[in-house]
Image (cartoon, rainbow, N blue to C red):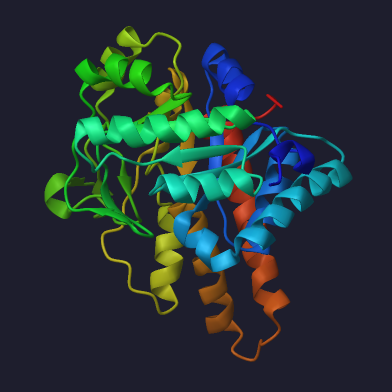
Amino acid sequence: MTSYKELGLVNTRDMFAKAVKGGYAIPAYNFNNMEQLQAIIMACVETKSPVILQVSKGARDYANINLLRNMARGATEYAHELGYDIPIVLHLDHGDSFETCKDCIDNGFSSVMIDGSSLPYEENIAVTKKVVEYAHQFDVTVEGELGVLAGIEDEVSSAVSHYTQPSEVIDFVSKTGVDSLAISIGTSHGASKFTPEQCTRNADGILIPPPLRFDILAEIEKKLPGFPIVLHGSSSVPQEYVKMINEHGGKLKDSVGIPEEQLRQAAKSAVCKINIDSDGRLAMTGTIRRIFDEHPEVFDPRKYLGPAREALKEMYEHKNRDVLGSAGKA
């Protein structure tokens, strides 16, 4: 077994307490390759932001658990090399079973999510409690989930959204012992988070999504004052990258995300972790498509992965400074 402390990582406990008190959210950026990881660390060191490195079950299978463990160690050493030791968490996103969570804990993850949200309520409590009991033996923090987000993210998919019921949160948290709670208030997984029928269109024909259910968030805050709340499916789907992809051979129709001003509003509340995955995929894919289209002679991966990494870095710096409010909090 490898403890996350051997890798220079931290869990989320102190990080979340500071974020709730300070009215900002910790960025939780998904990665599955070196360039994505480099961009995250460079951006967070530059902005002096704490960060959660997120790995989905699919990314874990893609990148290999042994490589991921050592990439996390490299991330902490890279931040030190860049001149600022930011707090870094390695987190399993949407763990689908006790066995998956256990394997990640045994391999150096400092935080895990057990997603039992699609199970009957009592089964969700049972599997979440089992993960918590194992994780807390090793000072690993655990995120649970109540409510179901629509959309698709790796193996996680749902055709419809089910809002979190505020009446259940006290019971769920007290029975499971989770350290944070992911809720559903209208965010959605993927780059096409809403159907055209759910949205309005502005003068440019861009879809405008329905507002988040801040009333549900407020009710949950009343019932769990100061408790760390997490938002999944919170990419903003930058339209410049959707346009770039479509102008250079892609086909993303009616892609729309969560407006950044709504995420900033959420970050000022008890929402202390905001998950961002699709935005990184869009920035990377758009940049690579543009280079392939404009420079068909290029075949050195550094010539397209390097600019994609820089686009990611700039976007993450913007998220930290202007959306999540985490800049300067490390």
